[in-house]
Image (cartoon, rainbow, N blue to C red):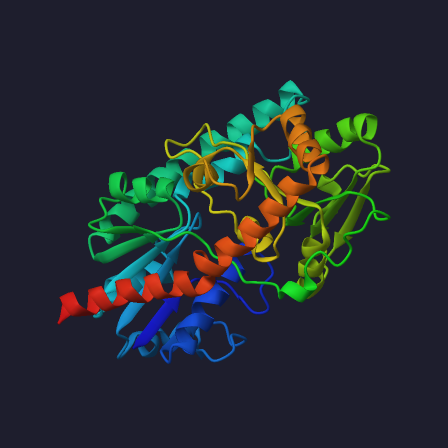
Length: 378
């Protein structure tokens, strides 16, 4: 099968969750002996790269056009041109509605949700007003183009709702992100009584939906209640969004293998997300970091929202918490005081990636949709 994959990211080496998702899919397709074509990304191992001006060659003879749709515009771009021009079945990978840009209006620049000046609030309100016309025209164009799409593969149920209702999708598949397994021999290598109890955050610090404003409050509270707990932040950039205290350590730009080692050695890992009150779809993310934590056999705490609530309510895989510093710290303390709970969470998380939510599952379900599209085209 020849897969023409459009995503407009230079994905290798992966620098964030969106890069990781695209890289794992491309690698998985190639591993299954499919030809993968990409545009303007000569670094991807094993893929065939075409410059933008060779769009016709990129599409020529392709069996599937697979297009990543996120908050960036499709309207009046090469994406729109390719979708209209494609003679093969088109499948969309839906990662965000157009209104994700409002996250910067409502959450951008806020380290603490309860301490914002009226002027800053007004600026964000004006920013949102300017975004609404762009969002309207973008969503209208997406709906029009969606008529040519065989299926919409969505990382969360919220995005599947968006595709069905806003884009009038004929077929949707919820296909959450996956994780890779860290070898068992590498897990929990620092776990002994002499080391401090460590809470780790890994990911980007540049996006306003990463929940760092919650953690900034938690580190302040923990300094008073649990001064022996150490908080470690592994971020790719923007360390200024983290308030550094005596109980915090910030690592910027660590290689991925070193981050995985730190995750595997941490006592608790956190993935916190605010809800999206401006969006009818609510929190639509499928947190990449959470599945990465699971693959490292980490005991985790995550927000009781969105996909996390959908998938993990009633399962002993992660602790679900409300987004208050009191509730988050209480969950950390619960694991700290209960070694058997910590071990149960670690083992259940590792088993989840082993048996249910590895990247091989994501790749297989995606290829199944491609085969269905080809069968219908025949």
